[in-house]
Length: 330
Image 1 (cartoon, one colour):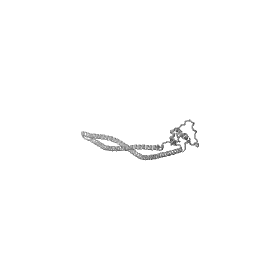
Image 2: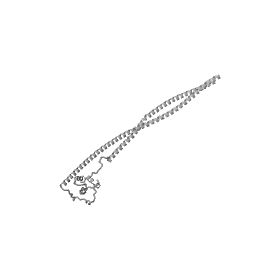
Image 3: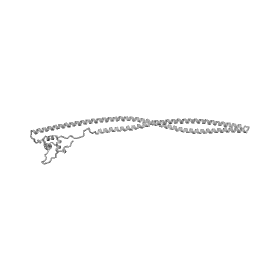
Image 4: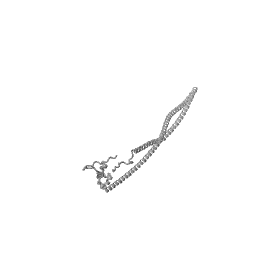
């Protein structure tokens, strides 16, 4: 009986299947994407916090602008009060001038009927002095009114500039408030997205853990199969060895019971024997290693060698004399 060699191959479970490798690659890709999106959301959150930190400075600038506007408004009120006072003084001076001119006219009328020239000259000199004093006072009041008008104009310009600054600050504050609200909304959305990503990452990790557990289970099953296969192979080898031992014992018993003779091969058509003197390609060591029953028979001196067995029985049984003659494993 010829022993067919067991085809060699990689034990299952020693290498991962392409499905497991693809699943692990998909899980690692998801984890990388989750980490990348988390970094982006963290950067957006840091930018939002930085803009929110700049809000107190803007509020301080707005408060300073309001204080400046109040100061300019008070200055304008004071200038308006001074202008009204100066206008009242001017009106009083004009009234005094009109009174002086009326008095001068009355005095001139009185001088017309005066008896002496000296009284007329004295009255005229006094009235001229009063008139010059009134004119000087009027000129001073007009200069004060001009200065007040210039100050009022400057105050108006300053107030307009302050109001523009206040409006710009208010617009900046409104824009900053809107931007902060937008960033807070984005932050909330980012937190929600980060939570979803964390849940997805946890799910991916759970899937990876389950996949690893399944791979370990498959590895254990493969190890058990390899162990079972090795045990079955060992049992098969032991059975073959026991069978060979029984056959050798049977051959030894037959050899002791009757003289050795050639077996009757009439029932099995044998190939044509080699011509006398024709060399036979034969590998003695390989033949005995491949066929343990022949090795046992040669050890029991039933056959003188493996070649003796091949020429008498092996060729008819279909045994191969060389490794190259073995059929390819299907």
